[in-house]
Length: 225
Image (tube, rainbow, N blue to C red):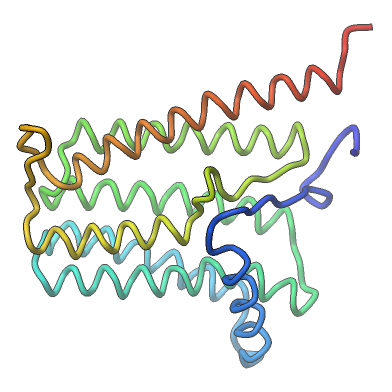
């Protein structure tokens, strides 16, 4: 392993449940796209779609039409966000540092838009939304630091990646149409509050385990002389 890894030499680790099938599909789609479709345009499309998810939650709440729009926007987000890097690699137009930076900036903004939309639409309480957002950003920082220090960029944890999370979010939007508030073990709460609490706990647990594992690995690579 390079003693001073850079984005150009970073190893991508993607072990989500759908990763293998998704990769094959994305390569086929990328090969069929016209030359006018570029990675930057796909990136912009994905970012705009994620903003659309947040706005739809904010102004539509749990309305059936809003739920369908959320599913549509999530599908468009998957298309743009998942395909931009694949298209660059298929066309041999990789810009690793540019892509890494831009994707992470837009992911951070997109998750902020999602949380803001859920809170504004009354589907998630502010404390749960902000706590979830803080946990998400904490894990993002850990992933970025590990990428720089170890040369390993993890796109998924516990066999769950961005695509699986989009599916869960879409399912939650559709379930909220039936009942945005549920009873769990005597707890009467918003559906997305329960999901937010579970997601926050998972993010924090992942952060702790990943931080400990990466610290041990760095200590092994750089022993005290």
